[in-house]
Image 1 (cartoon, rainbow, N blue to C red):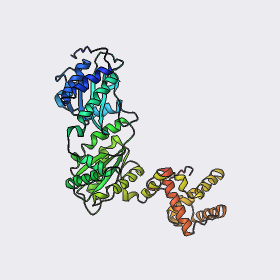
Image 2: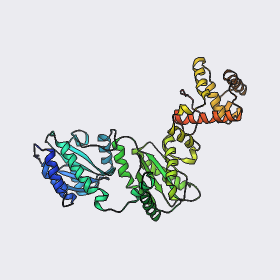
Image 3: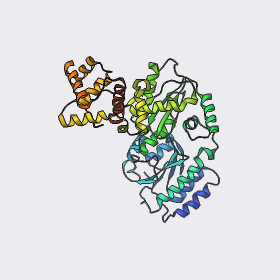
Image 4: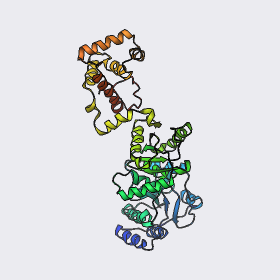
Length: 422
């Protein structure tokens, strides 16, 4: 039978500051959680970023399923975690402020959920169980004061923790990190991981749920592959793999990358993998390889060499609008096709991407070779376009490749059937 809890009423944010920051003085997280439970008159629990129990007060079962599971098992099942994340955190923003819910998984016991953050990291999750008690006006503000105090205790700097592989990876990627910080990070990673290396980039979606899953997932990467480190850098899960085969991505390693990408799938749509490299000081460049590959990937896991040279054009599109870089003939061809129901845009596209191979282009277009030649001659006549001249041919080819990346979002320039306006 669930206990009946009568909460303290008339709470004020100013009193919360006094209570919680006084509880900071001993430097004990358990004391702070106990102070919160006494302040609200309600059960309060705290888990880490992986939803493993740090502490709860009162320290006993109370007849509520989630509370009692954490009391006995010390961690929530992954299915329960994902249920909570998908139900409550499907919103924009990397983190979430305290919020109240009495629906979904909280229907049996309304509660306030809160995230503990410091130094740009998710450090834990807190909950205040209200049971039958209504939410009061200042409750959410008081809980925010509570998690702010928790952030001060749980931050790595406050706890005097040595740099982790995750933080070292982040520091080495960070272009704004001080040289001495980068040097320390390089020594840390070089001492823990041996080459050859590869980087996997997994862009994180825009919801708090995806961000929370990513924070939990990176701490479990080493359980899948011990010679790896993972961090969140600029809205991207970055995983550094060491001890790889020096002859290229072997089938066994490709399966490893795909398995890792599948594990990270709740936080993303696709992952990209860089080429192999030996010098960790070049990490940022290989991260860029992986990141541009991920942006081009249509799902699952793609490898840089499999989509090359698309990343070149993806990088250009990232720096400027696609339309500003295209040869003007592409727009002219498209507009003419729209007015006259012709197929000159696609004809020149296929002809360019097959490197002027008339037999291959005719086969892809499903037309006779003579029809292809007729269309090409008409393009030359109508637009005065010397498409066979080497410099113009290269400009047209590159424009179609840019178009494929910037407009169609296709990694393989696979000659799509429909064409949007350039």
